[in-house]
Image (cartoon, rainbow, N blue to C red; front, side):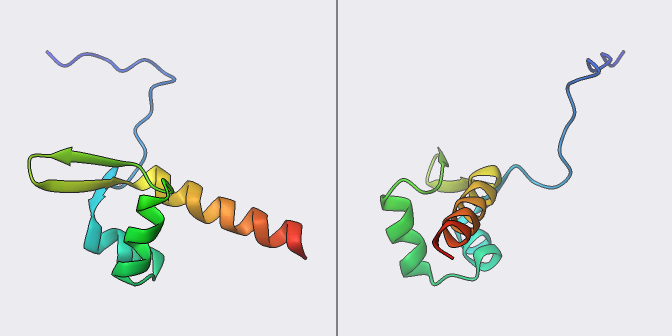
Length: 74
């Protein structure tokens, strides 16, 4: 019998991680720029064997930081 989820425990629609090529496409960056930003700690990753998964929430936070920086500079 399935357990009922607590009311505050909602699952976000969509994947929680994506592979690097998908993350690059989502951001519209070059692969090289993505890896530079990754080396700077801009994104969270999870390694599963040889597979590198990028946490989608970290992509959203990156874009939000970029928007905030742009707003503060203008």
